[in-house]
Length: 164
Image (cartoon, rainbow, N blue to C red):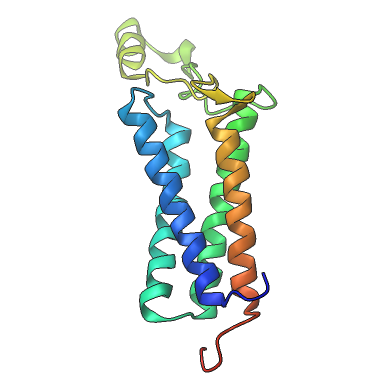
């Protein structure tokens, strides 16, 4: 990343997370309801976007850039986990993948209440894909790229003289 100060890298990474959040909300407004794992992936992006904004307005600090890196890595991990659930590589949360746990202990009324309260959107179903990659997969790819920007910022190379 020659020529880009650490502050700019952090700001671009934060803006990238904000853009991913905007894309998720756009898909949601178009009728693609998010599952529980989709919502979970949004929180680290929100944190990274806020951290990027703080760095842009308050100045670059390595510890803030490190927090941005941690947030981006969490987003990457959640997205990889979700993509793996969609690809049936591993099981997702039972309540999110259509299962109801503890069936033997539930009364008929409790079972009906659990079914009615169960989310309508399953975590193990792909709602939309592009080139065979689901939204969770694209989020993993983009989040990994943003993690790389955050890492470059943390390393502090090519800082503007006089910055911390």
